[in-house]
Image 1 (cartoon, rainbow, N blue to C red):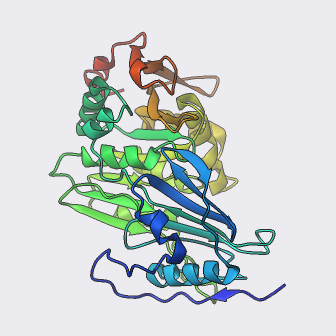
Image 2: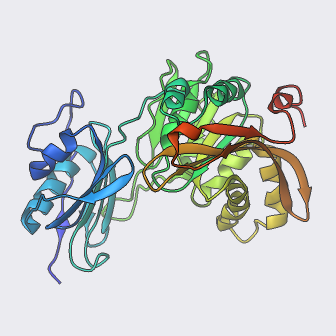
Length: 357
């Protein structure tokens, strides 16, 4: 196997502008506003996503061109890629997110993904105009955020979880101090008092790693009014739940197929923190920490929409946390003309009169 090594250097930049050739032959794809993501499976198989739907392009590269593009992009990200670290996840100056995997992790070719996040910065009202939700729901979620509810955004990959989370965070009262914690910088809330933190991988000697768990603990020392975790995947979920149970409002995203599955998953992830953490201990912690689960989905034609909003009542039966459905989307997921939501059995307004459990 040929030895592969890319040395990443950090370059100071005065702004998000990049040289026109930084993406090489992929530049025209990056310049196309209709394209959301570009990925390279092999030098002659390059795909893009438009409105959530993937398609094969007629652009081709050589293996050396793929490596050269990655090397130039890593110069901006300050991350490294070599045989000991065959993955890299980095944020580019224009806000795009780069992910690369190399052999022997991949079978033969370098796998490159560049996610552009075109809708970043949208407000809840703007997302409603894009049929992600109804106007009524956008106003309701705004009130939930302003009242300090703890919100969990769930959904599949590319469903728009981060975009929705960014809109929710932007609805936080302007007097609040918000700390965002991510693996790679993505969130850009429109707030005056906001501090963004991201994880750091280990260096060549295996030292210096800063994981999400450490950042959550450090954020608690920074006098936050709200703590936001871009995505919870592992043991950091325990630290977030403990923080939320201390009375600090917060939000996060999680991969799940439904609002109920999101809560079930959140009952499991903290078990990764150690053998002394039991399901019996975690269940009441989750029930007390989360107020609202907002589930988003992407249809086969790329339409993104909120499908469910559920309230975590705090009640537990046989280690199963009870959820009350507040809103559920009715109709074909990919029908823009059928943007209709049905309310659940309880009045969503009751949440604002019964905040104390």
